[in-house]
Image (cartoon, rainbow, N blue to C red; front, side, top):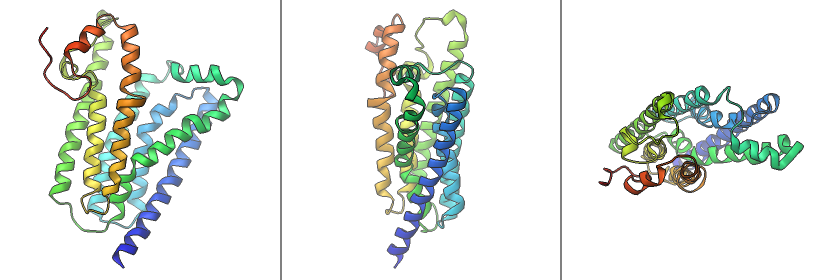
Length: 267
């Protein structure tokens, strides 16, 4: 009986998340048509997770403590990332990736982007959010030691991402660093501290969501997020770009870890 109820709540959580994400992405797509800038999807990425986690906490019957915890963890991450990207990107035109797609697709890009840009990101958002859905659906009371481990993992990841972004933004603001490679602070330990932190914090969210056991399948979420960062749109794309645009980047790669932080090799 309890298993059936849990399955019912999980089904409701998945439906609520799907509807919420569709609304967010369709609204964002309409805005992108109006301003002719599909790159707003990058800003919506983090904010969409935040809104989805809040809607789940408000509409699904589960343990209120775990729901509040997940809403805080996902919400804080999503708000920080979304506002950071908005501050960095707005007013600077469409990102080169979407400009290239727009050029290839021609006048049909607007309609096509609903599927290839906003629809795809929405589908990924749904998959990555699975631990949040499971965590919200389980009514087992209390937050135990496994969740505490998840909170610690999330906190370390959040700090890595936030501090890494802050250090890079400060470095870029200094005009004397034009054309140079950021390689101090967290950037001396890993070439991508923000991506490492992003992956790590989602593993923390996955641990919290899986504490009761029924949500262990939710680890699909952090697995997908880590894969995206390591193999698709994160590290590979930036590594290729930096090797072409930044003198000294090749030398930087020989002594600095690509992803997992470690002390740099001696020159």
